[in-house]
Length: 533
Image 1 (cartoon, rainbow, N blue to C red):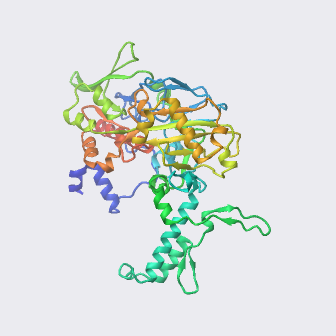
Image 2: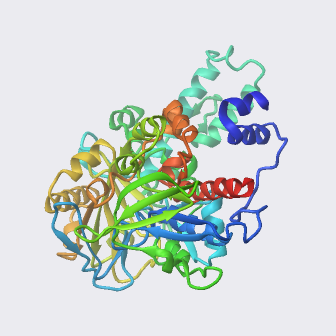
């Protein structure tokens, strides 16, 4: 443990102890314990950013007696947790103003995060504690569609048909080579008959009189004509060959998406929109009077951040203010920045070289979304799709169907969602071109239904790399893909009185869990420093 601590610090020791079973992993936690509620009395903290990370930090700090001021560059709360509703307005840098004209007040587009995995304990615990109502988010409905111009003449195919044919094809292949003795060496010590029985169950194989296993058609893949009453036994969909599936490369889109840890059922979403979480934070009372909302100053971009000494005491100074307006100077004992690391570097006045270099190495991914209101929920009535995501081999990439208000009059589709190079290309297009691309892609998934049911002039398109005071959607997965880069950033904190919080400072980039847990970590570090004097 001493060696582990020397390499990776306290966090590494903690993970080592839990891995060895010497320390119990907490099953639920949304409170920082072990510190007196008034330990921060007389101390002040400036929090940069009123997104989920910043508001979590403000909540945790005020509950321990700290005086907190949250400085937000935009004219709204929530950061990238941006739920767009009727009447809301926004504009990308250099782009036209977009106004949400959804016809019903209950319609919305989650332009930022849109789902909560069940194992994101911190976010779930805060939803419970702050009384944020949750409902299921459906990541996959077996009627969701996969589309590729190179197969089926470009026609979309339901997930169930591809997934279950692939299972059957692989199972039949394995069963044949097993019975031919070609896997004897690999199956040493394995009951081969049980292995074959498992394959039969996994792939829906049929056993022939001679003992061989074959994959005919399977009801798991769905029906051309659904079974009904009387003698209507239905007509099964045809078999899809392994060659066709491999040619389509569906696994490069969403075929195996639900196997990812963060997309495994069940997933949840706040009832009424993702912004219900930060609205709940804003309503929380501050000990001594007021609410978290009253600690936030909007429309005040940070101009500079620097460490300094005042009468021998270490402090931090943040200068901020509305563009073209008078600058405001705030001095506090500590600062928690939730800005993208490179933005903090650009605002920094006297940060250490190591801190600057470590933060500058953190790169961000661009994501984009398009929202379209539909006058008729044709995906439910015509295509039997209830929630989930369809995938298309196109820069549009994904179409999300609403997971609530089933059978209601209308609904909003997330008609395009992508990230990375596809999003960079998409975000470089004019707004109208993005909307047209989403409509064209939607027609491939739902021929004859998409444009017909689109409510004109309700479309919204947003690229986070183009939004004011943002450089993208989330940091690249440095913790996993570039551990040295990530560790260098973690080791560089704090720089003087400046701490970091945000999903980039976690193993959950792009997820609110990363924002919440990093804010708690920053708070704990400040509490420990205050406690140590």
